[in-house]
Image 1: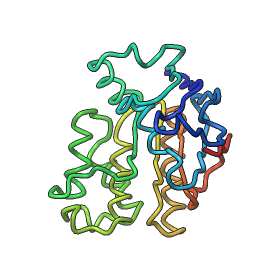
Image 2: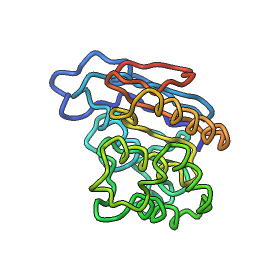
Image 3: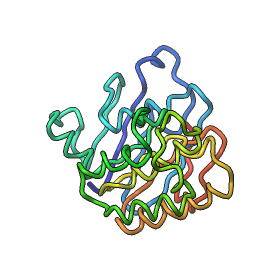
Image 4: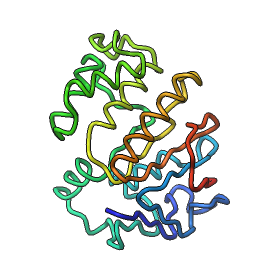
Length: 213
């Protein structure tokens, strides 16, 4: 997958009163190898946008294309393959299993993809300074620790596009810089694109384009 194009997209909930936006009801293309930041106030629909692109929701007007193919034509079975091989999403609410440990949450994803070795996973956890927390259940971790766990999990697969919904909302600047370095290295390794959303606290990277939602 080389491009994600959105054209005239608007959440149906905004249909009666469309907000001013550089994305909604516009034509925007995201391409491999580039870094994008989407800035938005709360309630402007950034999580909705990611859910539309990830195929989890279809309650929008307009169209979204993967390499000039409308996503409405993608079957459920093909979506499963796309989410394993082409798209990785960090949800704002993380969607970790609270009764599983941090390590179990990550390995559960990695078993589907076989993308990282156990040693590589441990190295990422160590780099983000949560190695000592890996055997604790996620329900006992702070939100910032859970965010780091979910970020490592999101990197445990091949992807053309990495979608990060408010990835550092509860993480300090020092650890955020480490997260930016880790993500940048993985994205460049895969020749992929990263699309980051933010309501104020930005992941510091060299963005090719900044858009206001």
